[in-house]
Image 1 (cartoon, one colour):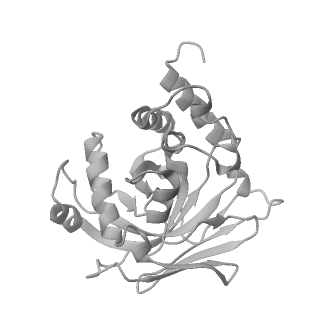
Image 2: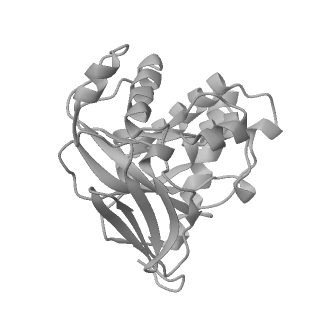
Length: 263
C-alpha cells in the first residue's frame, strides 16, 4: 500500500481481512518478521479499529497450554488486545458471516479493579482483581487453514475475534482445580480443567500484567483479562448453541445464527 511502512502495510492488510471476513497471506511468506515486529503490527492494526470508534477493554492470553507451547516451539505465552466491538453479550446470537473460520474455547476471565503498574509483584497483580467469570473466546485466524508462524499469529492479534462473559463472581480462594466443559448443542464437545491454563489461571494473569507492562500498555481498571483456553478449541458452526461451564463459577453461552439468517 502506497505511502505506508512495511509494518503499516501488514497491519492494514490484516485489518481489512478481519473487516471483510476474508483470508490473507501470512506476513512471514513475504519477508522476515520478528516477534517484536509482529507486536508492533498488532498495535497498528488495533489502532485502526480504535480509529473507527472501538475502545480497548482488555487483553487475551494465548499459548497458555504447555502442549501448545511445545508445538509452536516457544517458552512464553503470547497476548492480544480486546476491543469493545469484540464483546458479545451473554446468550446473544451472532452472525456466522462476521467470521472466516471461527473456533470457540472455554476460558476464565478476570476483571481488573484498579490500574496495575508495570513491574508490579504478583501479589499486587492478583489483589487488583475484583471478580472472575466463566467465558467463551471466539478465535478466528485471518490466514488460510489456521496456519501460521509465531510471528504471524502475534501480528494477527493472537487470533482474537470475540468473547462472551458469564456473570461476574466474587474472587474465589483458588482457581487451579476447577472442571471445565465446552458444550455444543447440549452435548459435551470438550472437557478439561482450569489447571490446563499454565497450571493455574492466576499465572496467566500475572504473565499478562508483566508482558503488557513491558510493552508500555499496563492493565487498566475495568479491563478484562482472558486467561486462555481450558480445553481445545472447536469449530463454531452456523446454527449451533455453545456453552462454557466452569465448576463453581457458572456458565457463558452464545448462539450462532443459521447461514441463511441475516442479523
